Length: 211
Image 1 (cartoon, rainbow, N blue to C red):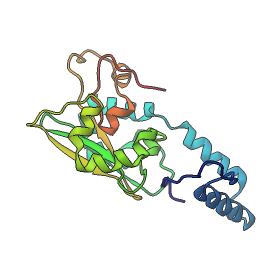
Image 2 (tube, rainbow, N blue to C red; image 1 turned 45 degrees about the horizontal axis):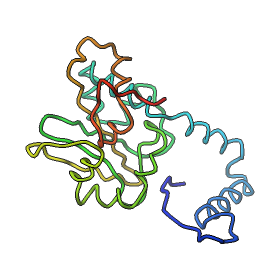
Image 3 (tube, rainbow, N blue to C red; image 1 turned 90 degrees about the horizontal axis):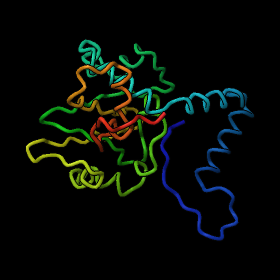
Image 4 (cartoon, rainbow, N blue to C red; image 1 turned 180 degrees about the vertical axis):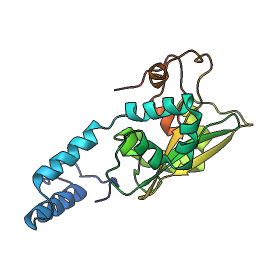
């Protein structure tokens, strides 16, 4: 099953309790259970796995990359393999590409087709990430989109957009904030938020990672 969440609407006053894609999901799920290809208990376990993933997991990976250059190299070379080494399990066949922000390049991730997102590492995507205006404008005018999030990228810094697909997901490795040289790893992780790993914000000493 793909985690593509295509937009759909049910008109006001409709008697339908569910939209088209929700009905399709229910039908397929019930058919799989009826054919004994999967059990309701297995579905519940998978939902529990999804619910357990939060941006805090990605934040710990970023903090480790900031303090461990060898781990950072492995993370940039093969994001999925490095995350698995860190103890993150992937419940699908997607690859993970980690894009590093530097003094000369800023990265932003989106999914122009729907809402593909590195869920094993960051959990569920924010609602705005799934909306069509962000998906379209992140590609066509990324600097304007970043500015609307309060992130101004200097003209001499290039902006690169990672467009996720069904099989390939992106995550941003943000730059470590200045003045954190004495911070412990867990203190660094507290500075990394979901938005910094999407690329719409910079880590800040005032930021706190949502659990």
